[in-house]
Image 1 (cartoon, rainbow, N blue to C red):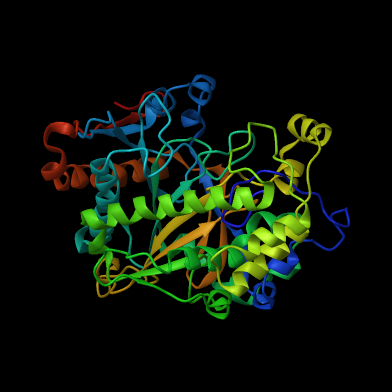
Image 2 (tube, rainbow, N blue to C red):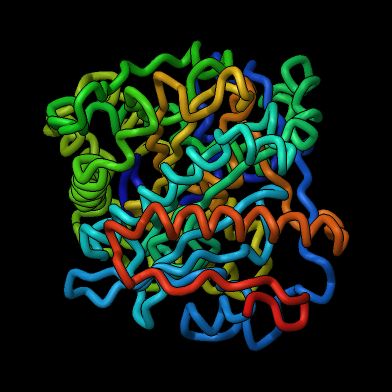
Length: 467
């Protein structure tokens, strides 16, 4: 189970059984959710050319730098006594033709915002800001054909889900830097009049429209109501299910920022750190409410659920608005224990039943930063006067914020990765863009890192990668 924003512990079985039966978690979705348009098939992104596919050694390497091996574009050594090291990486399976990842690359796992030094977080968010500035430059826009594109920054945090498919498969603090060109976005034009969420089967819907999509947003918003955001001009917005379903507001609890520039402030890094602490503390409280223990379950175990009456009494004692308490009560009515023999079968079987029946171990959430304007010379994305920071808790969905997002007015878009392969020419164009950004970013970070930014590498070929 993974209560609301909370810790995935006991798991659940369909109340009625069978994929064709009613979904016991359907009551957690508002009426508007069933009618909202979704694009869960339209966005297909090729994988790398065959020669640049991950090798067996890269896939199974224990250390991040060994996994990144041929894909490391630049290394950023961050001071601060924590030994943090960020790697700007050419992603193994892209989310867009033009994308990158900035990942902490120490030998030990540092999965969340509070596991790295503040300067490391500042470098990470400053790199996101520099991507915004880079793609907004008219010369860069013309050189790489960026006009009409959209940009997203996405971060996933799921440190405790280590026994199944996860929102954060690699337990390293990392940021996805994503840019879709106008040509890539074209398939979304018909999505607004295409299939609705209700048109999809329950298994697909549970993964791509997580039961906590709306109820979890209200929970997080309630948890943040008394938090001083500490960023001038930032505002926590009231939840608006109709706006989400209409595609004018991202899913999740939403903080409206006064522009991209705030990513360069130390106050923004501190805000993300404090958000994580609040979500982590709430996850422990909710574990105790639902199971009687705040402990994180061991891999392939689930804490047994408390008696329903005890759970409902504990929910009533939480300092949360009545609608949120009601949603937690409906969640309690849907959750079921997973006996050890069932867990053993799920562990040995295929991923699909596991993802359908086993909850994640909270805090499990995605952060996404997006300004809903097309990037043009007249209206560059850097000029956006409002940027949405959305915090989306997860209960079942192992699809993170880079692969499932609000895009071009469509409330829920899934990025299907590895569909075919990029040509060598397209991959070379991608690496030219990546290197140009890496050089821009290195110059911008000099004041923060000094000599900590190593020389930006060049892409040699698919066999050798970045050298």
